[in-house]
Every structure is written in structure tokens, then in C-alpha cells.
Length: 113
Image (cartoon, rainbow, N blue to C red; front, side, top):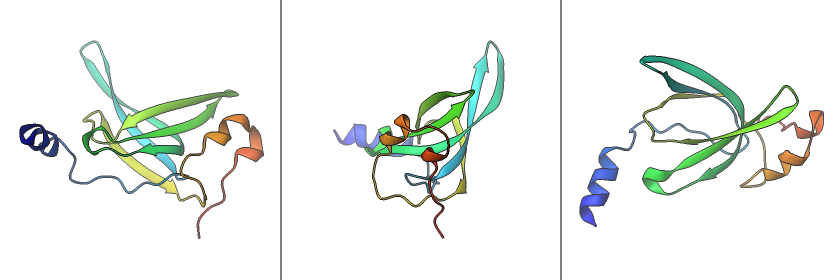
């Protein structure tokens, strides 16, 4: 068991992004297409975070062309290059799954001052 902990601690990122639920973020992700590699941006609201050491993840939601798109990103993945916080949101919930049912201005989150 100690060997597993040692391996997982060595593969964790030292500079973990400071994000919270409700933040509007830009996530830079490495995309491999054949032998080429590029960086793609995914921009949206953090609606959930799941804790658990090496398997820690966060879910980002955005609406693209009227269709809701959600992606789950592992925080310690080498494919997640950077997570930039555009603005901090003021929320009172740990999970914002209720945003899935809302459309337009009803899905807005107030900014934390």
C-alpha cells in the first residue's frame, strides 16, 4: 500500500490550480491527432469537484450553439496544461447540477467581490 501512495504522490502536480465550484475557467488541454499535438481551450463554469488524491477531478460546463457540453478533467493529468480562472463566482452549493435545467440569463452566476 505504501508503494501505491509513493507512486501516486510522485505523479501529482506540485502547482495545483486554485479553482472552486462556480468559477469561470479556461482549461488548456493537449489534443493528439495522429503524430501531431496541439493545445485546445475549453471555457466554461466549474459545476462540480470530486476530491480523492491522484484521481481528483473537476467538471466544466458551457453552452455551445444552444447545446450544453460538459467535460470532466483530471487535475493531475499531464494532458491538462493550464487552468486559468477568468472570474470567481459566488455560490452556496458544492455541486451546481441545477444549471443543467436553466437556459440563458437564468444560468448566470454572480461574481464574487
